[in-house]
Image (cartoon, rainbow, N blue to C red; front, side, top):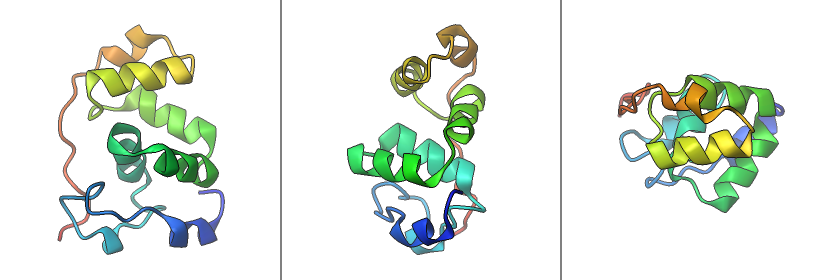
Length: 102
């Protein structure tokens, strides 16, 4: 994370973290989970927070290695980051369980 204070501003809506208690999500320890959720179902304000909070390369790595983004979201973020879509799209999307138990 770029700044620990950013953790206080993290979006904690139940619609983003529907499978866990949003207040228990640690944006540093659970970075991959947070990034995937925001890339997949976040809105523009969530995206702004994401890019303020994490290094661009960290987000790109999640896009490259992801297995939970749906096909449209994955293609969108590959285009945004100028990643060859074939590199991203070869991974089968699946639901990633919350690393935080409710």
